Amino acid sequence: MDSKTLAESIAKMLDDKKALDIETLEIGALTTVADYFVICSGSSTTQVKALADNVTEKCSEELGIEPLRIEGYKTCAWVLIDFGSVVVHVFKNDMRDFYSLDRLWGDAPKIPAE
Image 1 (tube, rainbow, N blue to C red):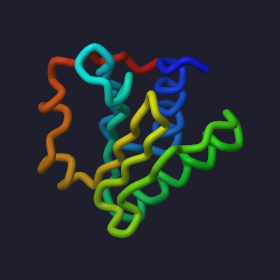
Image 2: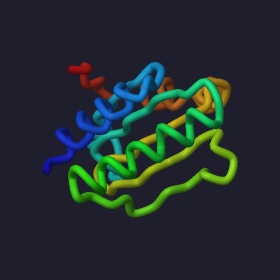
Image 3: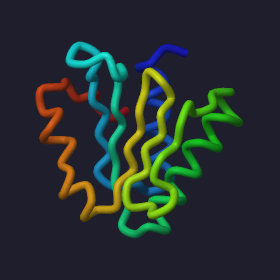
């Protein structure tokens, strides 16, 4: 599965679980960190954890893809799920506003949701 398809699949998984403000940014031309960021918000730490759990479980079960690393489960204010070419950021609303990755990576093209 190519990076763009994976990013779009993850965005769909997040949408199915009612994630807020889902954005997919194509960052490959700007950095070597990854090809895509998928950024979304949850209204509580419980929802952030549920969203992150859903992505990791669905990617494993349906796509056969395991994350390389997961960070932030301890507080569930910002959970980062690293799939290598795609990095998923699941924020609690206030943390997303504070770190403002959308603004920081504002030069990256946005991939429209399907």
